Length: 130
Image (cartoon, rainbow, N blue to C red; front, side, top):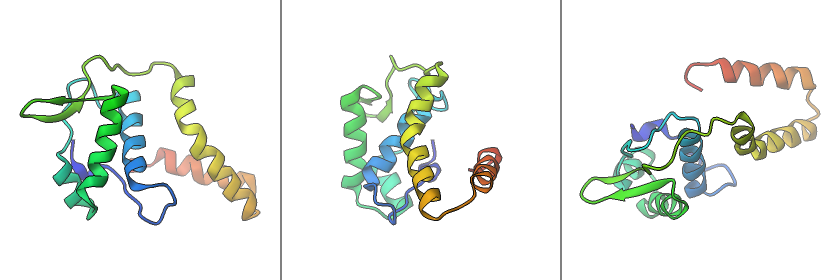
């Protein structure tokens, strides 16, 4: 996995370590990261995004404590061997729920037409590099 595949946005109210952890959880849950797949080092992620290495370390440590990642001696962090893709669409939708609620709240606050918001979401979902 390339460290640049993670998206970090310092302008968001969500702490950066949580942004990283949530993205990795989703990638594992969707099967895009498989058991045994190596993660970039803390230094690589920190350098790629110009963030403090302790921020990345915190995200990795949290995921290790949850059993999503495991530390491989001499090799760094990898997706835990016992983790498997969550085949349940409902389980994966549950992970998306907070972001959907937040987007819906923002749309209401901005008084945007529902059909325009949904059309834009569809565009974003269908983009290759989204």
